[in-house]
Amino acid sequence: MRDGGVQYQFSNVLWFPTHSPKVAMCLLRALNVKLLARDLLMSIGVSDTDICVLCGSAEESVQHLFFVCPFSAYLWALCGLKLGILGSISTLQDEAMNIQSRFKIKTNICVLAKHILSAAVWHIWKRRISEYSNYRSRTTFWCLGSYMRILDCC
Image (cartoon, rainbow, N blue to C red; front, side, top):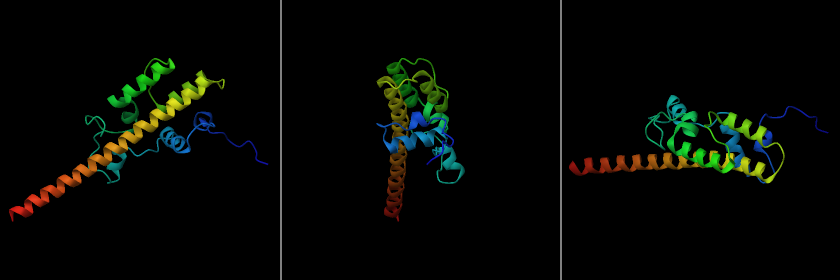
């Protein structure tokens, strides 16, 4: 038999029957601040810049990516309106705690709130990955085009 063990603080927000495992893992990594934003990628030498690929106007950190970036702020505002939660969100942990405390009874609105939190994080991260991939491929094609022009001049 298994003993009770230590329960993760946000386990009921992460793990529930209708939740997709890959979305739950993305949310888990986001809650534990383990997603690699460009500021961290730049510090380990993987990225050449730390500018946000979604807005192009600020340093991309986890905090900026999920809350300060205009794309994310708009998405969170829509989610908040849908759930009737008004106000700004400061961290993912605060929002998860808010959902846990506000929706304690397992109802459809509780499941909806958990799905909205997960979907918002998933879509922001997937959009960031998509934009980052497009940026890298554009940079690669730009470099190849520059090299071809240099070779044509020779």
